[in-house]
Image (cartoon, rainbow, N blue to C red):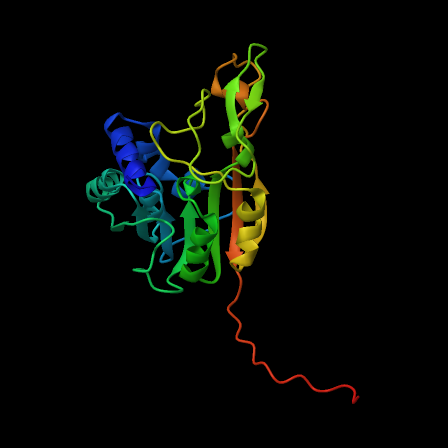
Length: 266
């Protein structure tokens, strides 16, 4: 089976098991949807009548919050089970949300420059080429369009176990190619999913190469000083698992080239 088929099946099982990834937006969260979505002030004061793509974001959370705030929402996800949650919650709340089952790195069915905002939770670890995702995001965004995304840091995916001294061991090579091997420490690995490590040169450099300008970068804190060894908060004291980035689509400029003038004669 391909990584797409395996990851689709993995998320189907997670939905059926009541995973936190399938937690839908609550009534309380919908009272202040933009505040729920954005604790850093990255979003504009209003998203009313903006076109928003919730990329690889099925599950009835992001799409519902954006739609509640007045945006025209399209949500793309590989998992039909996750998308059914978006459809169910949108119908229950009387909202309009368009759903599309597709892989984040192949969005040919969506038109160029058709979105004002692309918002993507942690998900690029499920595809081998993050630059292909960035290329699609840049194509789909309008001039000055906003791209908010979160990713797994490479070091987090290199950790394989916790040793007898409660130290976290890096056992996957930084230049590892292909699907990641099974590991003992599964703190930030989804069960039965196929994941890939993306290096910083592509996580950040890939944005620039795609025409996306980085405006801010944060490392969400998952550290808990009183956490016990083996708990997620304990590992977070030693290694931040995620990186969150705010980027913007550069203006599309057509440059008219002319033959270079000869400055000297041999």
